[in-house]
Length: 296
Image 1 (cartoon, rainbow, N blue to C red):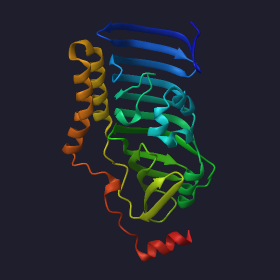
Image 2: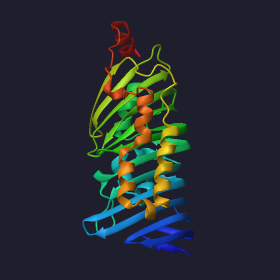
Image 3: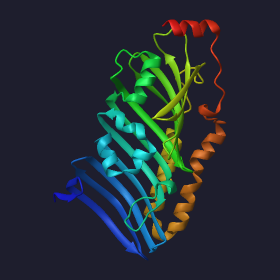
């Protein structure tokens, strides 16, 4: 009761723990903390000092971005823009990874899925976001209100691939997707679906948040009917959760190997012939559109 770990304070916690062959399994773990409600399943395998692995399936409810990053510093590397969001979020993350002897996750080894969402959020416009706000001529370039948001992605090969999602912000409806590399570089595409502009535009962003370059052209998403990965993400999460519950029967190596394949995600991509928008050509605006945009 009132257990303190670093900045985390728990007023209630329940968990089932099992240990076998230097592997600890956590199931049915729930906690009420000063950072929000937490649900967790996972394992730590410590067979040798050079063979340390973890797998986890965790949900946070009603937690701020700052507290997510306090709890899981790796999230800041995966989604550095997350800290710009103010308000309470819900976060789901399921992944496997290598860990060091201090039980820290080795970020380049993470493989898994992530989903972050919330309602009644404010996007605090730091310098990088202000550039986008300036391009789109937001009314409020300091803070932008977001009624609802859900972002989903898959983590593998030293990057987070963010699947297409729709976002209503300021006077705009945007469709977005991209790739965030773990070295803080990124490629994003933003299609402006609805706006005060008299025509639709698309914006390709590339670089990092200290040196961001952009191109304006035709939108790659024509409407809000973007490819939706929610079911594939749910299946991938369910498969890892099942592996965690059966870790002593399945074995750590098999669970990690299956998770690395990202089979559910890749099968869905193949079924819908999915191509990342950031890898598609950005078509140029007509001269009339370019002139009109400059005059806005």
